[in-house]
Length: 78
Image 1 (cartoon, one colour):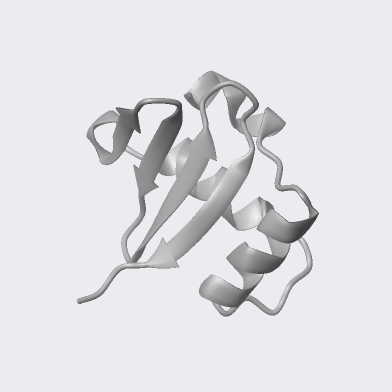
Image 2: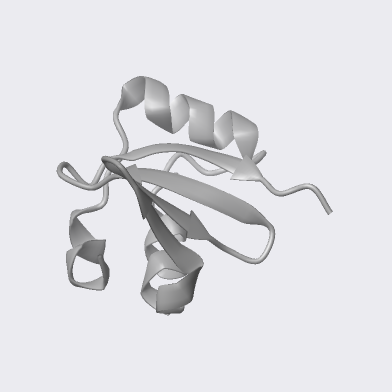
């Protein structure tokens, strides 16, 4: 996963969903996830079927394992 950090991307509707779910102000919604993935410990990444679930400090990113598309992101409840 870490060796494909630069190829992470989000499609049109996915980018809007990520921006809305994480309350982001920026239009580059993948820059933040790239930094998170690069700094994430291996135990914070779980593969379930065709998706990776990458846990940050207060959110989880869902990415497709084959296309490296960030599908969605959700804030974690505290």
